[in-house]
Structure formats: C-alpha cells, structure tokens
Image 1 (tube, rainbow, N blue to C red):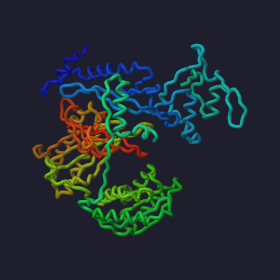
Image 2: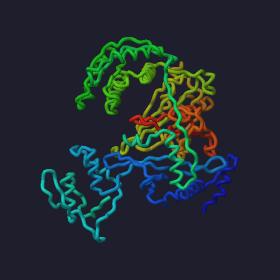
Image 3: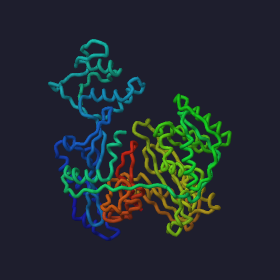
Image 4: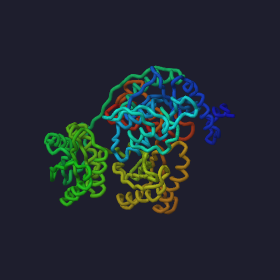
Length: 570
C-alpha cells in the first residue's frame, strides 16, 4: 500500500536527510487517478506517457500531414512534487498518428507521397507500417480467410477490371511478394506549423478546453503581447577585419549581388568590422547533384591555393537545403579549413538577417561580439572555464549499430566568447559520455595554450540531455571523469579547480505565461532572463527555470510558438 500521508510529511520536512522511498510509486498512482476521467471519456485515446488526444468532433483538433499521417492536438498531464505541496502540470501536446481506415488506403496515401520507383520504396513502406495496429472488419467467421483466398475486383491502368486475390494485388500494385500469404487479411513540415503556436493560443487551449477534457477546473485566459529585437546601433566589442574572401553565386549566375552587397558592407562597418573587397567572385552550379561533393572539393582546393580563407555562398530561394549545407560545410570548413558562410538571395537584403550573418563572421574570425564586465559576472572571473556537454543519438531508421556522438565544448579565456570542441563516437543510444576524461584534458590543454600555461581555477559545466533519473549517474560517472582529468593536469587534489555541474533540461512540460504586459516579450513569452526558483521547483536540490532568450520559437515555415524555459539542476 502507498501512504500518501508519509509523502506529504516528506514534502513538508525541512530536514536535508528526509527521504520517502515510495515516492515514485505514489506519483505513479496519483497520475493514474488524475488520468481516470480522460481515459473514460468517449473518443479519448492515450499515447505515450500521460498524453491524451480527443478523436471525436467537436473537441478533436487535427491536421492532415499527407502520406497517410495526421497530426492531433492533445494535452499532457503529470503530478509533480514541490516544496510542501503537490502540483498538477498541464501542457499542450501534439502527436503524429496513422490515419484510420483500410490498411490498403493507408498504403496508397504513402505511395502518393513517395516515389514508388525508388529502389528503397519497399523498405520505406515496411518501416512506415511497422507497429501499425490493425483489426479485421470483414470476417464472417473466426476462420476468416487468407490472402490467397480473398478476392476483389481491381482495375489496373488502361486494363479491364478483373478479380484478383490480395496476394496478387500486392504483387501488381506494389511489387511486393507476401512472405506469409496464408496469414489473415486485415483492414485498419506541416507538423511544425500545427504544433508551434503563440503562447496566448496554447494558454487558452489549456484553460478553456484542456482542463475541461481532462476533468480539471478551468481558469482565465491570457492576453497576446508584442515584442521584437535588433542589433541596430550596436558595435562588436572586439571586431575583426575581413580576410581574403570570395563571393560565390551558387545556382543562379544571373543574381545581381551589387545592392545586397552594399547593404551587407554597410552593416559590417556599422558593427565596427574592417571591410576589404572580395578577392574574387565566381559562379558555382549546384547541378548535377551526383557530382556536387567532388566539384565542391575541387573548388575549395582551387581557392585555397589563392590563399582565400573565407567563402560567402549566395544560394537561390529563401531557405538553405540541409543536404547542400552539410556537404558544403564538410568540404569547406572541415576538409579544407576554409570558413564558409551561407546566405539566401531573398533574405540577404534584410538588415536583421545581415546582423546575424555579421555575428557569425566575426566569431569565425576570432572576434568577440559582446562582453560582460567582470564585476557583473561574479563569482565568474578570468580564471573560470565554462563547459558544455551533450550526446547526439542515431535518428529513427538509422542502420543497426549506428554510434552516438558525444561532444564537449569549453571556453578558452575570461571573455567567454570562443568555445572550442572535442568529440568522440561511442556506443549507440548510451547517454553517459564514455571518453569524457580525455576530452576534458584536451579542453584544459587549449586553455593553458591561450593563457600562458595557466589552468582554470573554477569550472562550470552545463550538461544537456540527462533525465531526472540519471542525476546520480552523472555524479558517479561523469564527475569521476572530471576528477581523473584534474589528477592528470593539476596533480594533487588540493590544486584541483572548484567545479559545479548544472544539468539543463529542455524537454519538460512546464510553461510560464506573463500576466502583465510589462513582463512580456516576443510573441507573448516571458522576458529573457526571467528566473523561477520557487513555487514549482523540486522539493530537494537546487533547481530553477530560466527563460534563456527572447522567447519566440519559429518553425520552418515561420509559425511562432511557446518557448520552454530551461530547467536546471545544480
């Protein structure tokens, strides 16, 4: 049995050693009770952990994503513990679902959005259908029938209608030979625009619709508030000079770059950068794609021979294709050591867009864009190193055995502007960093090189991607790795630097909404720098929520959404 009285006594206790061993079980039980109303509602489905989606009108909100998929808007609920009380967290959730209906219709929709002539089509279709729930709706008896027995009328293009079996249909329509033909036959970017909404809309959905669907009490709606940002009138604190550089028109040799270049140059000078005219301008065709990588390789080799160290690529359209961007960066920055900067024809004229480009160029060239006075940074000082750690895991559909990649970045001096990196591949989907000690030694070596052989006296570590259940593992494994590096570089323990590890969480469901206009920014989010360290924080430890930036999440098609605060645990 679970004694909720003991749970509440634990939450009210001010003793640091207080502990309630059944806390997880108690929270799980409370979540079951909390979700009972929603689970019993007609048309409500449960997907994932405590996420509820209505599938019946008029409460249902959905959007067709194409390819047999649709997006549903629902709600997430969770019981959370805090200081001296229990909290209920409610947030908007969005999920992608298979459209209901006959399985063959689902496959047809998938075929319409994918190239059936692609040699990988069958493998993609198989992966798409993996895990789909299906049920029979036609069988007149439990015996049913299999794909060699059941027939229906089918009309091929430019051919008369004829009767075919299900097995024959799969072979004709999809060139798929059923591996188990005697088994019973069964029936059964856009996403971002649907999911990303301004805070006002999400708040009103939670208050006016979600609370009702979940059986909870509703409150009052929020107001939409304006906000913006720019870098006009600002100079970089340590501006650099453009080196020998090239202007590259990629894909559109007719693009007139004179006017955009004039605005770009004006912006660089306004930020304090020293402008030198490009050493060369050239055209680079993006087609054919099959030879793009080899042609880029040759191009960078040629401009490298002319001592060009930066190439500005002007790309057609409004957005930069990810495959092109990846190949360009790999060939230029990684292989040939030539800085690359990408701009698009439609955006290059914008002052705000050029401001972002200038920020990147100045940093790439070793400059410092902004600087905080030492007296305003205390207890940070010129001997403090800031470290960031994260692990990137293989995406769904990756080949079996694909590794995860662990990365470490660290500041190189007291300006906190330049961060150099180390990275290592490791066992796939393992979050703890395997070779962390070696990477920390590399970062300390760079610090010493930049600081006349000295080492940092303080180290602040920001660790991303760690769940609440892994906090202790971080202390047991990753803190130990730091201590191993300290032993190599500092020697005796009394010479080691002070260290603070802050676990940063972004994938949580806590959202903050400003209630006064003067407290809002962006599309109605709380102001950057807003810190919440009480009321909704954990009952033990030192955690806080921080709104880290302007608070306007923009999806790929420009739809704004609610910015989640950073949840940090020290």
